[in-house]
Image 1 (cartoon, rainbow, N blue to C red):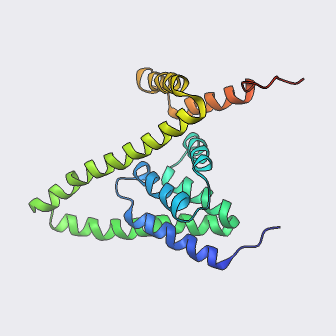
Image 2 (image 1 turned 120 degrees about the vertical axis):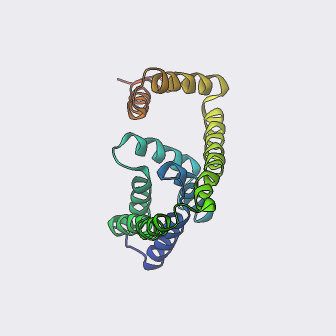
Image 3 (image 1 turned 30 degrees about the vertical axis):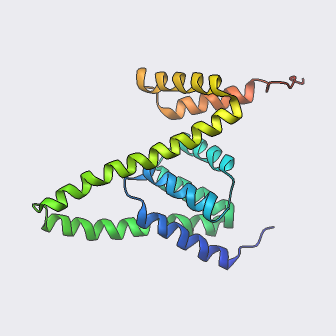
Length: 189
């Protein structure tokens, strides 16, 4: 049985507090911050593990901003790590929301306050674009360019063209991966 390391819990708490403080734009905008902290800075998991966890997390109900920290915390330090990572992520958001809503309500007519929200949108867009490019490159390396583009176009058509929930698309791909034999490997009975 794995023991929980208190230094690890402290590191986990401060990592996700930092993400909670800097995670402007909601859950999807926090994904690149979480990836940077977990994969590059702390090396708690690989890029491939993060991508798998993100895909599975998107199929589950609820906000991604709590699912990712919960899973990562659990993986790093068990149940206590899960609780600490989720609380560390949401506590700064709750406190900042209370504080900022009070300030914004009081100063809502000031021009720079109105422009502040609009100015954050391009920054969040660049962060999401970087994440998309990273995942696109990983997909290209794992599957090849043509299959990656074909899957992306099919997924985009199902999600945006037919209005299918992304969870169903990811679930269908997971089911196909489980049911279809991997290339170069024969199915055993």
